[in-house]
Length: 576
Image 1: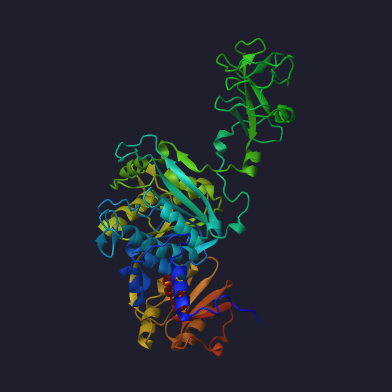
Image 2: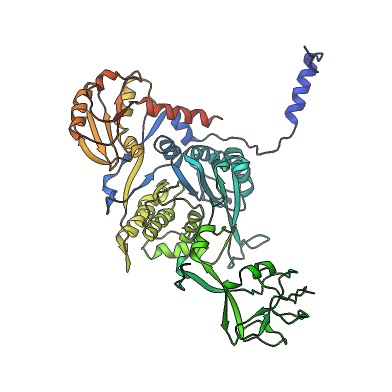
């Protein structure tokens, strides 16, 4: 056996070597983890959801049901790990920026400000716990967008590299404001950021991120079978840099030749003859010389008294030249989104002014254009599930409803927010209600919302604790299966209940003595769809013989073990 180089080390030498290794610096993020009361609570009690029926809105039963969860987002993420594990397509969050400003965010019931020497460690502890839970919810290839400012952008990048994997980092988007204030200590603050990560970048396709093409711009059709096109983008654009093979003559319909502004001209006055630019004063076309030869048929010549082009004698040309762009081709190729956002529509002020029109006062609402742009860039389908667990004023919810209206989609949103300063009851929910019912002269958009609050039950150790958990799990199970229409339920006597949607039904048997009774009722439904049966069991098993008379397609899952197993895994995750 080969000798290890440490075989001859004494005990003292080995201890010294270990100390030396411990001192070695590692690349990555290190912080002092700070315990959080809210997270520790889940070691003693398990979070569940209780519906507030008074806030339910059903305006079109055929449309998807959206959710608002009122409670600390650590607790709601706990429940979502049971109901929505690997079901989320897009996450957008706008967490505290940890600027050090007073009353920006609470940790263990204390406001964190710039005088707290552990404020960065507390923020990282706070974010780490929540991002680990959020990661479990994402499908492969799904996206998470995180808005952040200067104070924590570097720390957040390293934290996300650790949680999601550096290979799953997509980009850092800058949101730029041209109307920056002059409040900065040394530089005027003029941008913040959005970090974008994905779950398993290996599953992404070339077109996984692309911006939606605005079809309203494609208004012309030559009835040649090529479809709608636009021709309002000039072939010459003054912002282009000098390029050697992009300065050449183009022949116009009247036989004249045109070229971009400049001081040098081709020696031969013929179509496609080119000249090398000598300086930045010699402008060029957008297309290279070979592209022009291949795609001349896409040029559109428009007479203009303000043409920036020159003719063959160096005078202002009669024509300006534009290019045809066909909608179907543009949609096939997609448009790569930029990693910066600039424009008035992306300013926070736009978000604040927007919700004022609904009679809602809230100073920190994100603009709808920001979240709309991010969601569209993910190129997800029209049935995407979109989560925002720092929902604030509910901008994400409004964007999802508007997108569904625009393209007749069935996207679903999940908004999670606590009720600090009554934000959930007085801002988030009223805003969703205003969007659905209409406000001012704005017509409402039909949608459905269910509103839940977090509650707690003892950690299931005793048989009585298990019964308590099962008794309070109805909402969790219905959300997990998306079955809300009541088929059979006796609220006074908690024996069993049956719920359904258009594709399946869910049965919850709270008392194992009621199995036969529930099976009889299930046979009456004559359901052609699969039925999920949750049955109470002390020992986490069930007798198959109890369900042998069922004449429908079904699957049985013992409870509360189905819930407890998920919560146990989360508890282990917290300590990693």
